[in-house]
Structures are given as structure tokens and as C-alpha cells.
Amino acid sequence: MKLSQDKVAIISDDDLNRRVRTIRGLIRNNRFSHEKLKELQTEFCYLHREAEIREARREAHQLYIRQLRHNSRTRGA
Image (cartoon, rainbow, N blue to C red):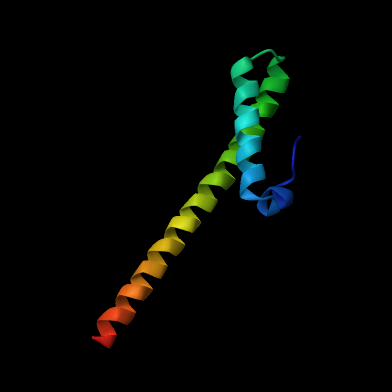
């Protein structure tokens, strides 16, 4: 289940979100040794951070597009 950082960067959003949900569920289940739980928590942090980065990038791009459209309308008027 563990992915390298390079592979995390290229998996689809759907796969990333599915992995985040799966690992969150495994952590909540808490039926693992201390070491395994620590490993799952670390993996969760990497995946969750990647999801946050992608969401922030998506929001920044949407804002950029809105501003671009707004600027093109105000220049044309």
C-alpha cells in the first residue's frame, strides 16, 4: 500500500482520495501493532498533504481563471 513520493504525485485524484479514506479507516480501526499504526499514520500524512496541495492548486487555478475572465470583460467594456 505504501507509495513513494514520486508515485503519490502522479496517482489520480480519485485514487488518492480512496487511499486517504482507506488508511483513515484502518487507523480508526486501531487493530495494529504500535509500529504498524505509526507506519499507517505516516502514510496517511503524506497522502493527506498531497490531497491538500492538489485542492489548493485547484482553488488557485479557479481564482486565476475568474480574474482572467473579469479582466478581459473590464478591458473590453
